[in-house]
Image (cartoon, one colour):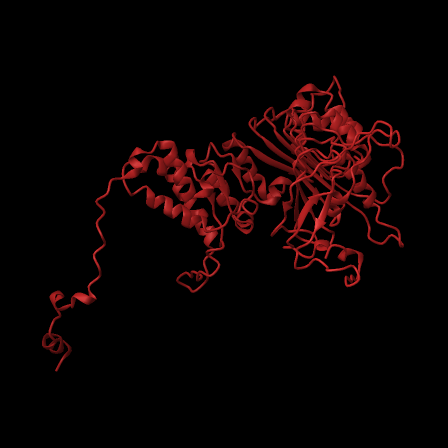
Length: 530
């Protein structure tokens, strides 16, 4: 019997012969009213933003710095599905999807276990590169989509290996504000000349750019070839330029808000001094200076001598500069509107013995005071300890009333601050006039030792009577708080109560409190409160 005879002889199954138990269940039909019809369009857009969180990301961070939890491609797929639900959802979801930032990555937390894709020859496919090519084809075929694209992000290897593809892509993105670029473009390498020319000609609305060692010539020619008038964030790293070239080139960016000066060996106080022959230093909101040993506090004071700079600057970061911690008070005095200050410095000598004015500011809310020193001191205490003693005196003197968050690189700092007695600001003996100090506002202290990776969080809650003698304070619970090691671990259950003088006493748990002093043993001084 042949094959066709067997097929004719075999009975055909009918759909009616399937038992009801094997049939797929019918999905329930919803007869309720659509509650989203009563929602305003702004609320609907807000809901869709939670479906695709990165769609509203307007920062100018790189692909690596702006990575979020979850799969971004899956979020964009879910948002695309929202556009097909009903006509009411289509305009808001489609507009959010069109303006979503492209983040072409190889894998995220949800994609790490996904199988690899292979081509017809059995070779693995570079998924980010394929996505970039598909995006290039989409924007070149639809100019409307290209005009809506504001950001283009891709992994490091993708942007380093596809310079020609990136150039063809950005040529049809006239409103592009940020794009991940290969490293050689910032140093004027020959392989990136075409890409940089295309970027200057087709993307006049760019908001972030960097110039590194090797790009001194193109940076000096900025006043002659003004391109990016809307640039907001600029990074200068490793350039050998004089103060005159720096001031003239910075004048080419009238909307500059964030400036980073990193490893500029020729940068000194003259770059910030008032000079009638040079353009004024631009008014910034954020200024970051790193590895500039010739810059001192006098240069920053000259920068703040301009009323425009004094009012505009909100954040200042100083890392390995000539601005010593003992001269930091001069910067705060000249910057009355500063909200965030970071100083990262390694010291070799103790804090000066002469009387130094305290750090005083009524606007400062965030302070990174990361002072470190060498651990090998031949039996002497580390030099950094004296700098934190100075910081405690500034805090207890109430010279920083608006401070809410403090970061220090001293693991013992929270214990020292909580148990330190308030200083006497005005002496005169026991019968003379006295003024007791102490913190008058809540303070979040984040501490980390030199051998630690994570920040330990310790909240500080002052008493209700601002530390006057004879007053009491309600207990402040530190349950599940990440305290330092001297408190017995990361989740030590402790309670702090007032000592009647504006300070605090540490009280351990009832189950861990020693019954008597004779039966209490400790192996080291760090076990004092265990």
